[in-house]
Image 1 (cartoon, rainbow, N blue to C red):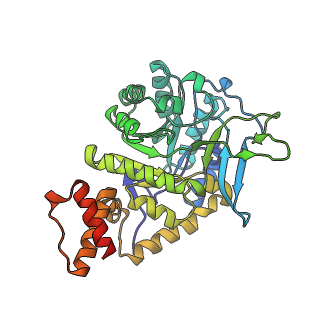
Image 2: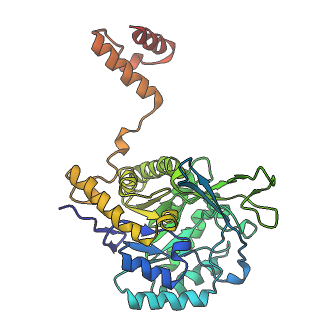
Image 3: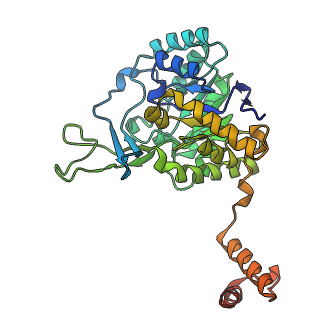
Length: 370
């Protein structure tokens, strides 16, 4: 029988399914529910030292519905936790007392100040957390404080902050990457150079859900106005898979041994299998929990186990990154298809030294015409 148990960065997880940072990990009550339902780990909602600067509004969610009525896209303009950090310290301690073997990860976000990052890391460690996720990726709120994606889009700052955390932390830490950037490998590489144990990706995509054609107001509407928010749910999965593939490819070639936690639209065990095939060690679910409840981890684990049994994979390591080898350039796809057609028709093809320029294109066109 296959097993879902895995060890990542020294953290022993019963399965790779992790509660992603957000509303599903907003307090001790719901974190406890997650552990009782059997989640492999929980990343709590992002905390900062001074919650008084965090003010949420309502409504702060908007949904994209398929014709069937299914929610396939979800936008939120919710900020990080607005609960006092002292309360979080107390709840982290209580959580570890109640679930000593449960893997509890603190998601932290701070301003561009070394002393603030060191303080929040040290205080969270003292409260007993097992690891950290550094939120460099929230696409909305607090950009004026150079927090979230505003920090994660700057590789130089990202590397420096990871260096601060590396010097202060004794527990593993993952840098959560923003998709709101042209080449996600650039900040990812910077975070790993700075000392991050691993990476998480992707956070939500900056978006505008839509405009109400009766009121002409964009949604979600707050006092008649709105602001771009973070897009998640099933519709973002193809983008998340692409970026996870890019990060995993970079890790494999430049930072072998560093970990990757994949997220973005995961709602089933089959979704999880795709992320692991593209190089993820673990998978995170956030919006899916909001849609289906904490108990959704059970069918997801069953589906992932069924996939593993079908392919005779005994462990997650047996198929992690197995699909990365099948990515190549478009030019190489043309070359491979042209060679296959030539072989089928009995015609010869040029050698590698001749697969260049106009002559290659002419030969491809000729073979395609038969």
